[in-house]
Image 1 (tube, rainbow, N blue to C red):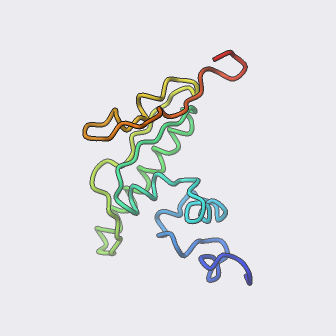
Image 2: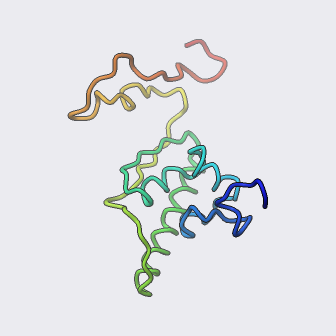
Length: 138
């Protein structure tokens, strides 16, 4: 549509900027957010599209299970495409995501601090993390 994002001009319901396998289970608004705002299924795009190692933390175990299922479906689709001889460019180097469940108030400073990774420079300030469940004093 005129005035809409260029990535949707050919097909209003699918972003031309994302590979079809990466668009599966992602609504058009979220497809746009992945490309423009960095939300939605961003970790999958970063891992498979750019080959970056990604760790994802989610407090809701159901969402982790759904993400793992989507990952398995994507891997199956990639294997099928490869078996057919289709060229699908992904830059995945290793298992791309390490989903974990954690309550939002769980200690996250040490896990998020670059100083916790070998060879990383320490931050001048630790990352900001929630102190406790909503409605409780920190």
